[in-house]
Length: 312
Image (tube, rainbow, N blue to C red; front, side):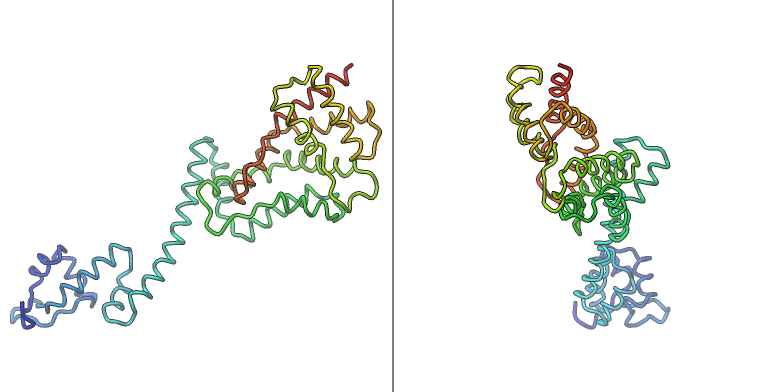
């Protein structure tokens, strides 16, 4: 049609696929203004109203508010400016929805009580500063007796979760579970006991340099035996156990005797808490690190082997 043709609301509705009621609403809001009215008061619109309504419909489908749309069609704002602002708002909404979905997924798998559900939601929605405060409280407890040694400062860093700016759903679920673990008084006491025991086992003057704990030594020396299928009660296990205890004696500056063996047994039994493995698995997932080795088989093998030989 030529530029002098004017459309009724009904004609606009047929051309745009919008309802007459919707077009009248947009017209009342000043988004699509009639060019003229008939003697009977019916609105008439210029042909460019079709293009304006097509743009309005697209922007509404994208979730943009009417005030912003009016400013776009009136050229008070550019499409780029509105798109950037709306994309940022959507990022926030998406983040909130992902947090909610992560909490609900955890709830499906765990069947929590209402109090546990509330706690999971609170943990998922903590700010960065609040997350830092929670983890610092946990690590302060764990390393309470560290005396600020470089060795424990490094260990503390290795136990600190650093969620990315845009975590995946899996990382969010891992954070909720790790945060719950860090709030568990029994788990805090267990990990603190391991850290405190390691300090107590070290000879004087060694806190200023890194020293492997018995779990790390077991992973290195016992791990291959476990992988090879050597049973802890077999004669093939004897040299493995002997090498393990000798290496621990060297690390801790103690004689390789029955007293050391009993100490190792006690420390390894403490370290056998499956929550310890779980913490480091969750930590690796949150920080994007490679999945850590599952140490429970190595610790269990070492405990059994030492029990057998201590009893002799």
